[in-house]
Image (cartoon, rainbow, N blue to C red; front, side):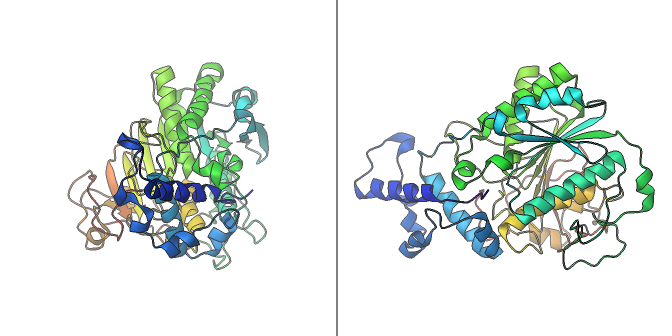
Length: 438
């Protein structure tokens, strides 16, 4: 499955905009394309002609590009979508086609689909007696970076919930090729004491939304709201039929899955009058197609607490603030350090979170509030330090910046400097070449 298998829609976008200016704009109101949005006003003819079409682009080719090349390409396509007002979301996967996996304490998995999630949940021993973590994926696992990041997250929860020590060897890819196999406090290596951790502390369910986003058309035209409502309805049934209270449900959304998680949380509240406990966004993605009169995607208020980790704001991710607290790795205009391409950069948020899930690593990622990278580096951030990841305090608000290592262990672990006040604030970013929210 290739996420960016085809960019055929791009041809339609360019053609529609070009035709509108060649023959005159016959529309009115919000449907009219203003002259200042003409593609040639910010892209040269050569750049427009060089944009991929047909089957010229796929996920592997994105991974073969440098981070900067991938960011430029995605940025151009994103803005072309935004100036074409007719590009409304139109793809909603069937619930029967969305794979779901229950991860059991013995490491085995129970596979089903979204239609059968509640039925299977009721069949799992002790399901819902402890925390229920539901992970919504955002990209297909044909990418090694995606597969590895998802594997790390599952392994981390296996250890946290069931006390399982993961073997460390080359075969299971617990180390990157350039990582030394030595005792650390990283996501890969932990003390023997955790083997005896008390079991049945939680339940892990994976909704593999990324598996059905098999081409760019589906990815770009995904109806975030309707897809989220479909998942939200399932969560309501999980509460009503499987006696899983909202207080123990933690939704984790990856990429576009984070935006879907927000819609699911809103649907849950509409139907039950209650909010989910927490939604965590792992590099929330840009939304390419959206309805003009609908605010789509994740926002604070979609759960009791919403936190977000941004690792590729200029690539596949967005720099828009989506949570009560938003963590920007190396600032709002930087890709994750050490990432070779935009896909890997997007997956770093999942890797960071997975590292924090491992027992003993909860405070690996210290951050401070700051309104710019320059302010952070000059120690002018305000508010007390916070920790990105599973141990993020629920009373945090605002924007936080932190630095990470370029390879695992990613968390620098050293405490960030304490500052004078408590909360960060949502202020305009002062760094980065591109100041637009995208």
